Image (cartoon, rainbow, N blue to C red; front, side, top):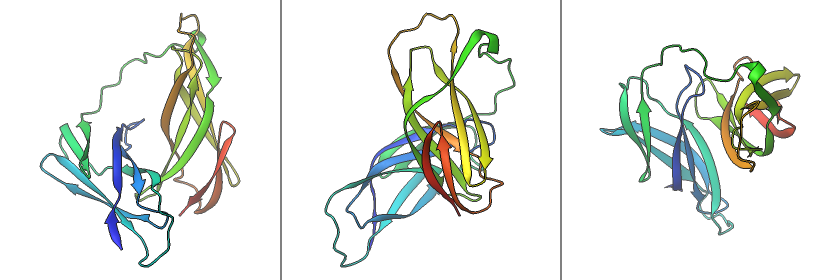
Length: 216
């Protein structure tokens, strides 16, 4: 039986580097324990994009009768769209999308290495998401906290050791800055480079947290 997922929120994630696509993060609920996301359809509209999350469940199945939350990241197809402001509509939930020309290269505004403190990011949890795209794209959603009001996400380094994909996520803060001394929760989506990896089963490790990752 085909249906539509209930969508609670939709958020646009901007590309972290030039050449990457915009990603739409959809959060919602599936009707019961048997219902699964079948596929996601994108269509162009007069105002931007319409996204439909279609679900499937077996007829006659005995299922747990409770809503099942889900989070799904979808790569948006903006090819051919001119620069401007658009709306992305997902079952009546809207998110604003702004397409703009690439910015000209400017001198970095980040503190110089000698003036900044770099530390490993403190993470609480992570979720691995494989985007519905070709070639396959993988992102990891990390959650954690900054130790103060000045700290921000810094460099991300990736390496591969056999069947382990290792990501080191760092934070950065100005060395002598006066900052609010309170923990600041954060949530960031980080791309995982799988372009040169052979399809198969891997383990993704991010600052000590691990999750299995299957590359189709």
